[in-house]
Length: 348
Figure 1 (cartoon, rainbow, N blue to C red):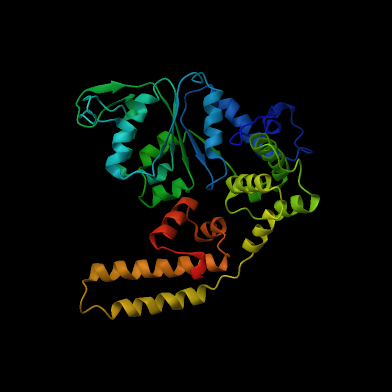
Figure 2: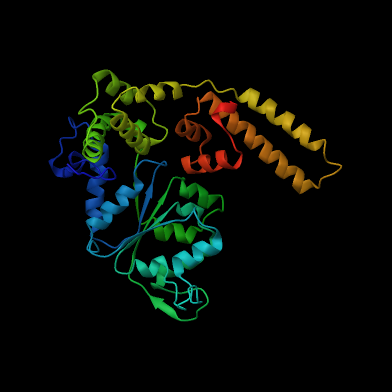
């Protein structure tokens, strides 16, 4: 069994040909594993789709390790984590001097030469950068920012998204020609709630990993706790499960699982949210004499967002992962908004 929490348990990696699909409890991931094996040796672009936290990066790294590029670099770029100008520099590099030594900045595409690059959250890539990426896929060359000299690269491109990208293309948010270039092979990683039979081997895997890392913790969970984990909906998917098992090992107690019960089946009140939003709009509109329209709209949006965040977190008993799933935003985005609005559990 692997000792890395960010890898699949060895039992998921049984060849599909040796798999009895009528009796195996973990067909879903093994099927993905078989697809990875089939396409890894090629250089086709692969689009990995699935909800946040399902393990899309794990699939991408597995593709790299099984490819002919395994000895080359694996480079990851989060397309949602940088503003437009920084994302362009990060991907394509900058010819202009950025250090005292007056050296050029090599972009991630150059760093990934003869290897693999993973473009995570590809749907968030600005359209101007999409156009430059399309050129790389077609011509295998690009120019650094501020340069007219083309650079040849030999890199395999893997992308990941938690959006329905074809629908986003239809809405005009993503280039159709680039989508066709990226979507040669599509690997969908199902949400953990769609494969509860895989929770037991994942739990065993994470227990082994974190017991080795921290030198303690339970060897296995009680049947009652394991049964509860298999019934839970896991809005944060495998990432949430991994964090729960890590806390159980560190604290040496299965009481952590009780927190999930508080997050399960909250009683949302959409009507009260709508009423609160209407009240906020009325309050902000009352200041129209002193503010311009854009400022009024900004204040209404921020005040509404603040109120909805506070109400949702309160209903979820400040279980942030469950709140992020309910609001359909990433866990990272939720944490940033909590910090921006200075929300605190004590105030709720």
